[in-house]
Image 1: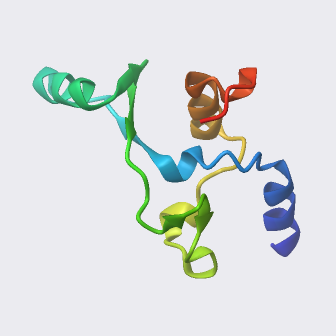
Image 2: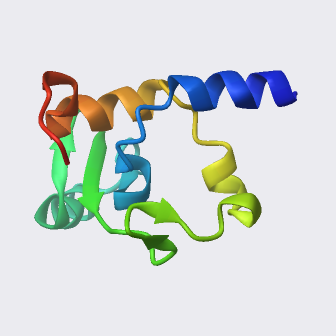
Image 3: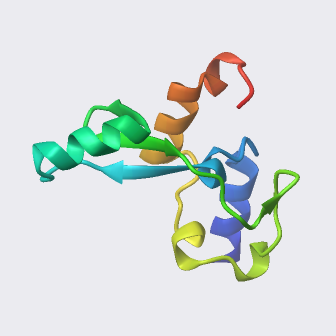
Length: 97
């Protein structure tokens, strides 16, 4: 397990987008709810990206990294959500968030 965590950390670009945004799944929501989320963020396919910086992020470093919530621990480095955030933000093209 430690090997998997270490490998994921090596793949991480340290952009911090996972801590500066939230992804809202829009599939199955009422059209009014989709419209609401669209006013707060950027809709890409069936997802809405909303800028919402984590309160534990200080100077782009997680202050509770060792005790971070399960949702953060389960965020897949280089997974679908990670790639979507990097693409939409322009990070993959060299634009820093």
